[in-house]
Length: 139
Image (cartoon, rainbow, N blue to C red):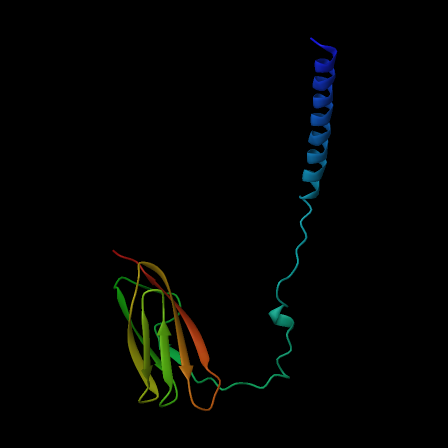
């Protein structure tokens, strides 16, 4: 072998060893994970200074987390008269104006978890929303 070839191989081995050492020592630093809270703790939040918004939209049935074996479910709720009610899910959308304080809407379900967003809009208030999770399991 030439002298230049031996020098090149030796330098390659030394450089490879240096890179391996740097990678080894840098990988130990990643084990020290810092936890940074994303949102303030809800338990320590002072709610006395915030004005309370009257609850305009409420879902009377079904309950949160209901498991059904049919591909449709009837959602019953209460909202002020003449409210605009919007019902949205991945496979269903409906918009209607409530003629009375109670409303009823049949929602099509997909197999698995169905996240249904209900929104109520009145002329004189901030829109209110509620999310309902229903699970459809075929038998």
